[in-house]
Length: 65
Image (spheres, rainbow, N blue to C red):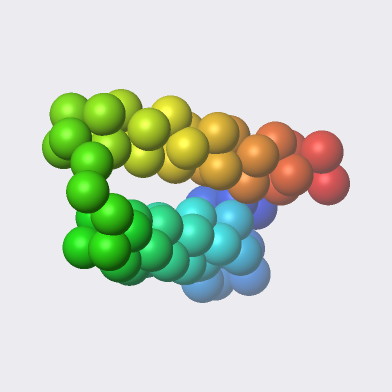
């Protein structure tokens, strides 16, 4: 798990992957919110669950290596 945060004197690939995933998730969720008519509470719950699953898979992927 140490390589997830810090590797060879710089941030590890895990932090980079999580930051990129979070940024893309934010942009796509904003696009979906603007294009679809949906209640904000339902959208936020769905987005939070989706982000947690994605972040968990990234953590799991770097943990297995």
